[in-house]
Length: 223
Image (cartoon, rainbow, N blue to C red):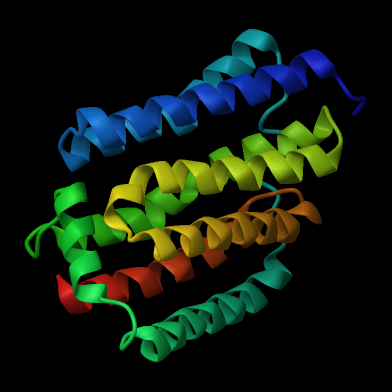
């Protein structure tokens, strides 16, 4: 597909507006979790689809293409990532106060022991899909059809990191916040890379799910 500055600019503006809107919802309005989740579905999934329809931007081309032969390798890789994150937690738990971090995050997200299981399942399966569709499929795969891939890499990973920092920043001490920003940006680049070959989000979605499984495991230990 030939580069199209107008369509590329449209996708970039759409992504920025959606991220700013959700950041305001997360940090200022702070509705109940179920309301916030419904808004995220509308903003990260439905709004891009409506935008694509109105502007005649091809958004879902090749979205449902699955490499079935590579799925088992993906689950092995996901399991490895789960183990790495838990290993990193084990090595750092004596240096970072994870209990206070989880308490602060739980308070910010309005999550308690009674609602944790439902929230954990939503984050691991649904939220991970929404973010991969939005940040990887819309902000990277489709954007790269209309502009240089290098720009799509930088934009997608940068927005992925900034969005999450805006969402969790108040819960993290400065050093961990910086590490989280760097880690999220690098993670975003890696997610973009693994999706770049087949141009669908299944690879990054599986990896994202297993990373969330590990995070939810750590969260569960302190909830």
